[in-house]
Structure formats: C-alpha cells, structure tokens
Amino acid sequence: MNKPAKSSPPQATGEAKETIPADLAVEIRKMAHELSNALEVIVQTSYLLGTVGLKEPGSEWLRMLDNGVNKAMDINLALRNYVKENSPS
Image (cartoon, rainbow, N blue to C red):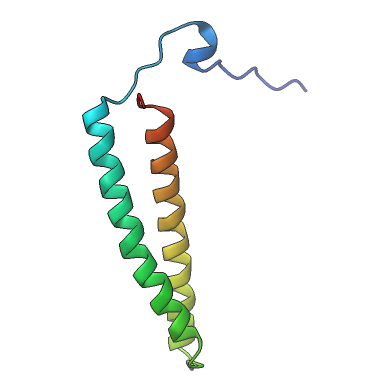
C-alpha cells in the first residue's frame, strides 16, 4: 500500500517565507532567555531534591516535576530555534 505524498513546505514551492519582524524577534528572544533562566532554577532545585532520597509519594512528584521541566525546556528550545530560523538577523 502506497503512502500519500506529503505536501511540500512553502519554501520548496517558491513561495516567499514570511519572517518575524526584527523588533518582535528581539523581544521573543529576551523572553525565551528569561524563561531559560527560570527553568534552570527549577532544574537545579529538582536535582538537589533528588539527592535527599525522597520517599513515596515525594519521589513520584519529583519524577513528575522532572518530566514537566524537560518538556518546558524542549518547548523553549523549539521556540528559540523557530525565532532564529524565521527572523532577519
């Protein structure tokens, strides 16, 4: 069974790629940087909590915290990459 062909991204069809205005990109980068700083505090605190040998349910809560922080860090990185790839500079 053949898979349906995927549609081409706009860049591949010759359409102009819209970019994020430079001033807006700068503000988004600043906010993403501040988010990274806040997440770093949470990551370090989570690490320190992991060194004290929490009992259940605390250890499960710590795993939940770690999972949430990792997702937030991935989203923040994706945001930063998107801005970088879609803004003039």
